[in-house]
Length: 144
Figure: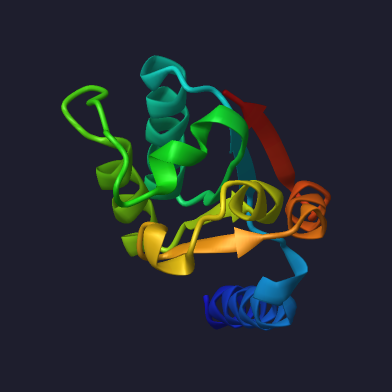
């Protein structure tokens, strides 16, 4: 009986040591990059809703806003509702949860958009920033 307890203790000790060697940095977290370019509130709103849901599920979410959807990342734009929320509401919720929202630097320059025009928490991003997010380990991409 003591021998049985001894072997159980050895196995428990070995399991404890092996779990210490498993570093959390060895496993990259799951990531999603949602690119929104459509002026359609249904498409853009759905993309933002997906990003929020993924962030809630523990997936690091990054939204890249470009094209006709740039207006949704601006303070002064008319923001229709998608499922009861404006795009600004969905953007702010995602940022609050730790997600990232980036607006395309090119469209900011073309539209003479000032930093004060952009919804708080939205970062201005270069194409390189988008490429870095898309090619990060464990990243998936969706476009709306």
